[in-house]
Image (cartoon, rainbow, N blue to C red; front, top):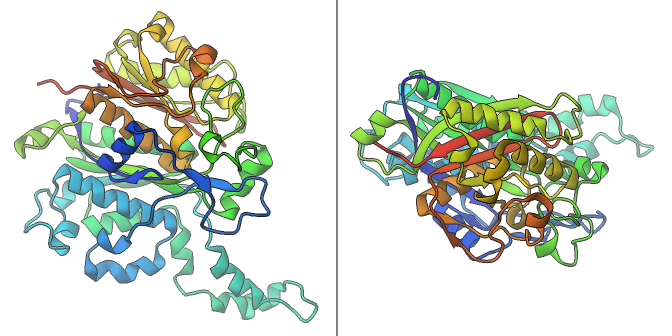
Length: 446
């Protein structure tokens, strides 16, 4: 473990296609609910993939103080998701922040020092709001019906709101979360694709362990349900185009016949806290974060290493940081994107790390139910492992019936499984880029 201070998890805030809030998500996961369906956000009829996993309806106003609601106009969908996750995480942890006081949900003063409250949030390359952008672009068309750069500079740009660009900067997720909850300590934004959440949580862990903060809100959020966000994975051939008529079976992690992944939206923010502070305020402790590791795939920026070496390296780094070995791992939280080459790489990495322990450890993979939402994916995975540890239960992994034969990973495909879980390892990697990160959580002991 790095540093002298122990770091524990005291709050979970989730926004997923199968439920918003940790309790709602966990119940949906146990009941094998699937969030993949026909796209509602826009007309996808011309696309080869017309399905995605979208969030249930939510009210942003229910998660911010009334005085801050005007700021919603400059929040992208990604930022809104992060703000919703932050509210649920803070509430779940029993923290009293300026947001909770402003909403009348808790009397003041705050029960934490804002100057010791930090944030590390993973974000994606936030996609522009196409209807808003298209309306402005339409005013920059010349008499021949062609786009004119001159008209765009003189007329078109003037039809965008003055603060338009602020909606789409990746650091706006952390910006709004820290303002809403008055988190004044270290704040950082990480943009490393699907590895972002794990890297953000790992950095927050280091921040608290070395004494630079007492509490951190960390994780990630992103929406991939946007025509611009769907373009790249479609061009790469990574989205499932055969599941339009059967969305619930479209994403099949680690399956021999995996047709590709499903785009999603959502994310998760967790509260990490110094153990001494959590104990002093009588907080509920989900588990202790004891290890963080990261690595890079140096063979390619766009294709996985078939040997699984980067995955194995990240997990082994995290285990070494935790002063544990593979023999201690009871549950593997697999990323399992449903993209066959990446799943094969990950499975090879787990086999390298686990060896004979693979046959005794359990595994869980949730992308069959919720798809892949970029920077938010890892935080949901991490929270799944923490909840499994807390409830001593391995939740079902949708669409993994044939995965054990292909990979050796022992999923619970149909029913929740009661299990003794002491240590959980979770891994995440970017589908474009080369980052890999791993986290290890243990059951809290005095």
